[in-house]
Image: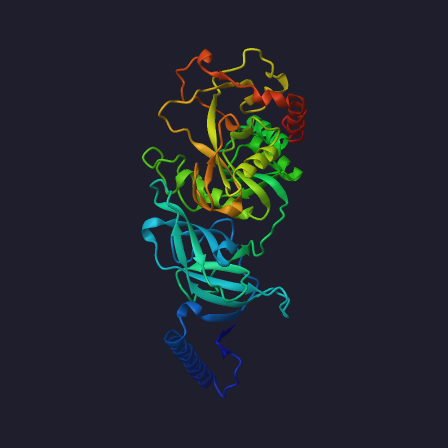
Length: 457
């Protein structure tokens, strides 16, 4: 190994020729002592005249150890997920992380250049800079011990390609490194609309509802769906493979249960654990930065929710109208409305025999919507311009640029087929809403095709 500190090189070698074995051992010991003293002296000298957070290290070693989707921060109980250059923060590197809130210690960034043109042909990390990290914990953590956080590496003095976080400023060899994404800003995007679905867990196997929802998405203008998968059932697994092969879906592995004890809910008293709802807040924030320069808009909602335009034929038409009305806004809050899975359409129009063997809800049979409750907050989900936001919670944006707009119910709202919240209401006390039936002509054959190609029909 070769370590350079501001141009001073120290080599350790066991190949020096010495008259005897004893002399050789003493020689190597003396050489190691001198080298250690020299390096220590130079580090002390740097502390005196150059800030430690600007110390430049050059290291030559093999291909960088690439981190997985979730990686423990070396020397701590914290986790790091992914890294992005934030052009809105003067090019600072934002590392999406999960921090144990009561055990936060001083953290350091190690920013490195991955030299793909290395003369050795190994793509080694050729230069690294260590700097003190800045940690911003998100305000929403719902009282759990761990919370979503941004670890910032500011004022990078090199064009870094990889980053790691550590509790030690001079720790390089033992680290795993995250590739830095979003290095370049873009003004054109591969996708117009992308849905970010936070988590699959608990062997989720609601295959029919998922396929129906995916096919509705495509008919209203969704081009990409992102899912963070901790675990799912065998039938949903087949569906995920189908849509991934089709190119509509990106499945991001999310093995959070290998690192922490995640909660199955959002309240520690009712569902104890280390982290809120399998890390839902972390995955939503990660998706924003993952698709910041890939998609014009993002929809942040759950797997059983459909953000549906009611006065426009597509999401594209809806957002054209909303952006003309609110040009400075990048956050649009959409009301959630419950369609109880316990209430069925009496006609049986969509009770199709070929779907009976497919596990999951048939959302086309549930056309009755619960009324708003007086003096009860109706949660929202969001359509966002990701370049105008910084941090999100589940139902609201925590940090963003420009005003957030509440979209009127009659313009757009969420179709959410699930267990009732007002289970005491009878069918005649609910509102009939057949919006999904408008897509019947294209929707039914598309659902059957997807089920067939997934091997479920």
